[in-house]
Every structure is written in C-alpha cells, then in structure tokens.
Image 1 (cartoon, rainbow, N blue to C red):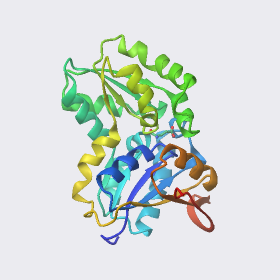
Image 2 (cartoon, helix red, strand yellow):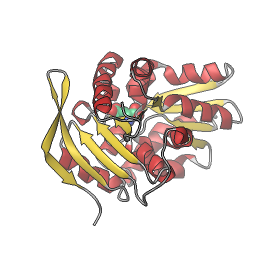
Image 3 (cartoon, rainbow, N blue to C red):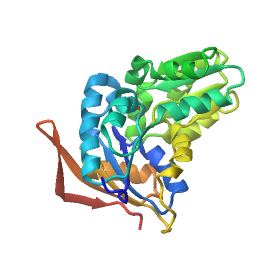
Image 4 (cartoon, helix red, strand yellow):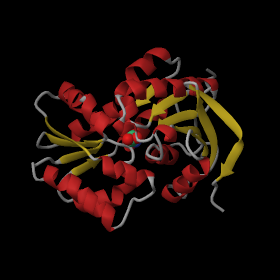
Length: 279
Ligand code: DGL
C-alpha cells in the first residue's frame, strides 16, 4: 500500500460517519475513504463470523485503494475482526473499542460503567473483557439497543420517538448507579443531543469517535486544505446513502459511489456516482 493514500473508515452503514465527523474536525486537510456495507445492515443481528468475513473483503478493497490507515468505525466489526485485520494488513488498523474502554476506565469515579451496543457486540463480550483487563474491579452493565441502530441508519436521530427509545434503553441502566455510559455503537452519537438530555446530568458519555480522533495524529497528514475530501462507497443504494449522510452530516462534502457484492467479492460500479457536496 502507498503511504500517501487516504485514511479509510468502515461501518455497516451511516454509523461510522460519527467517527468521520470527529476525524474531519481534527484533520481538516485529510483525504478520507468511507465504506459502508449497507447491503448487510444491520451487522448487530449477524454472527461475528459473518461480519469478520465481510469486513476482510473491505480490507482488501482498502488496500487496492492505497489506504494508508484503516479505522474500523464500527464496534461490531471491531469485535469481530480487529485482531485478524491487524495481523493481515500492512498499514495501521484501529478499532473503536479499546480507545473507548480506556477512556471510560479513566473517567469513571465510582467504577460503574454502562456499555450500549448492538446485539453482536454484546454477544462478543469484548467491552467487558477490555474494561476488566484495564481494571478488574470495574462493574459493567452491558445492554444491546438495536432499535436505536435502525432509527439512526434511517436518519431518525431526534424527536419524541427517539427520545422515548433512548429513555427506555438508558434509564434502567442509570438506576443501577453507573456514572459513565459508553456509546458502544457508532450509530448512537448521531443521537448525541438526545443522549445529552437524558444522560448527561447523571453520567459521563464516552463517544468512541472522539477517542479515535485523539489517537490518529500519528498517521494524519498536516492540514493543507480547508475542507476534507470524502469519497464514500456503499454496497447499498448510493442515492439513499448520500441523502441520509448529507442530512446527518451536512458539513461534510461526501460523494458516494456503489460497490456490489458478487460471489463473495466486492466490485466497484463506476457509473452510479452522486455528489452530495452541499450547495
Ligand atoms: N455501527 C455499528 C457498530 O458500531 C453497527 C450497527 C449495525 O449494523 O448493527 O456496532
């Protein structure tokens, strides 16, 4: 892989944009490549073996695009594939789980931490394992919140229904006395304002995207342009992906193209290109 290529980010859909947004703020001169396996969304319902197999095909794709670092901007794919990806790749591969776990362990005062995630991340047990490696005395409450994942993917990130769902997911956990809540699915920070309203007076919120942005400085290039360049690829419908991406992140100039799964491999479709750069 060439060392001058873009920084690649991966998610099952729109969730990794919350990580991209943080990176774009910290590294405005950067070129980003964002890939979404929207055809297989939601990853949270799949097995870790399925997710690992899919993600490794994206790792090949990133290598072909000369990415110089890969951020797995998806907790589920991090849980499924980080170790193998780091073993296989010739460039740095970062996952979102360890930075978030380390941050949560550092900021908790009473040692009680909640992890909200997808079903698959919950099943993997990775967050509790990482947190206990950092500090065996931590008490951890983990909970899958799959409905919030689907809402965010559809661009529904505010309003009464979202707030009701966040309350239903989080209030029983807050009642257990946790003082720190990890948003352990990258779709959730799209609802950050709602989480702030429901959680912030009772617990600290840890967003993996913020932690990754802090750690990526060693691979980022100096700021040379005013705005980052983002090329996005989706295995779903590029028009729909773009429309929601633009709604969720209106400040990011994203152009989206189509990837297709064909006999277990990823194929780039050149013709379906749509520019969502804001006017
Ligand atoms: N955004 C992803 C995560 O952080 C996955 C959501 C899904 O596809 O279920 O886990």
